[in-house]
Amino acid sequence: MRNSSSQAQLVLKLHNKYRAIHHAPALTWSSKLASSAHAWASQCDFKHSGDRYGENLALGYKDWNAAVGAWYDEGKHYNYNKGGFSIATGHFTQVVWKSTKQLGCAAVTCPKLGGTYYVCQYNPPGNVIDVHNAAFKRNVLKP
Image 1 (cartoon, rainbow, N blue to C red):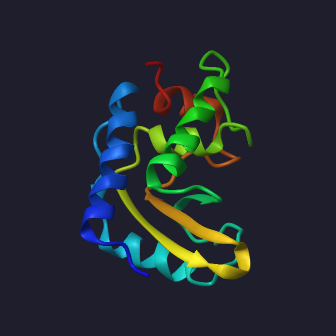
Image 2: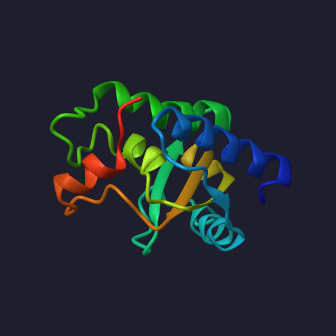
């Protein structure tokens, strides 16, 4: 199923609420990214797409509030003094990555995965493994 405009507005609002806490500018919705996220989610394969966009995935949550909230909650483990990529905080850093401008997301019911598969894609991407720590310090700001 495709996201309704109200779902799109909700997920955008959630991201922008968290980004504001970290002094990151508001994202805009991208229909292109939403279509890409939907195409990937529809495959019901719980792994990253490997596309050129940043990407957060979630499974087993009841709604967008819970999924985006879980991504943001990883921030309690983020070391602002050290910076850098960590598997434990990767969703969080992508949500608040200051230089990201656009967001597109989709939620698809995937019986073979046992629930709703949430996919958000971000452009330009942030928080990738090979990004230098200085980029994290510029893009993941303390509340």
